[in-house]
Image 1 (cartoon, rainbow, N blue to C red):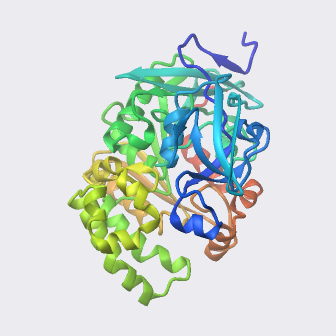
Image 2 (cartoon, rainbow, N blue to C red; image 1 turned 180 degrees about the horizontal axis):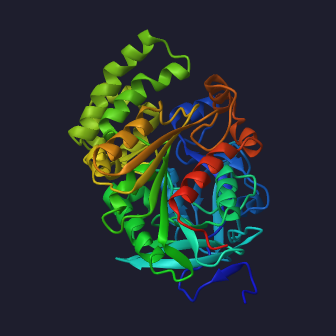
Length: 449
């Protein structure tokens, strides 16, 4: 008999800390805009209540310059230091408020643990090659040997734990659990409780694929679930990972949401050409911007230039000035150059051509990130052409993050005015859960309720 909802298996992983901040690397433009005299550090944009940084007294608008005596000038610097800290460790912060230096310290608060009303949560470990990753298995109380969904998250280096019941991702998982499906996830290297030689922000795409592969192997060792009925759910970049895992074991089915069927360089061309139109950028301006953007992507993804080499081109240095520090550290939109350049070598259509199982490719009607339903439609077409069974489904009103909107413009407005998170709390896409549950159920001969 299980006496607790949260089961921690015998393990080596300690609980990571809850920082409770959102931040951005300080740039010249941010310094000028906020009348800051300090020129190097990390600008704090949000401090959440009842968290470590709230206890430190750090507030929105402060500039963090040191952690535990070590200077920080980028988000990656903060992550590198805090990734080595655990619950109850002392954290000392040097920061500037109104251009005056303050130094304060406190005990690091541990991250709250995940709970579900009608399910058991088991925190486990996936160990390989200098990594010990946190795994999370959630099993519905009302089902023995439940079919299982392996949730493959997107490209960012955020944790896949979902403590808040308002989180649309948690609502989606809860609907799956209520329908009798178990859910499995694994943190990326260095994220959450994971202990790794390299943090997620420093690894290549192939190293990330290795992490998900090892997670898949761990899932297949779980005796409490139905290993004959495994479904992969690839969200966004997870939809690129999903077909690459089938060489380990072909699942009962694959579901993708907000993913692509073209190679990454081609997608980036579309991203720079089509997406700006949703944000009101004129065709003339897009054409002008793409004189730099498209050449940059070829040098970056195809020719694989380093950050230093790219910055030697004045056109790039001027156009991407806000990213200049990141380029110097070979970082671009939250990931290392190795990740993007490695990803550009992956033949995504070929990966889908080798999938012989059931596939449901879904696209949200108002998904700005995935741009158009053509990607999901193409996934289904490739699978059907090569011996699998592919279906396409458009999810009305939904965006990339499982949230409903009235229109694409409504989505753009919430992204622009900072109200997206508050809107997301009350507008979860129930159709996404309904369609995925109906489809998975149709592929299983019998649910053992």
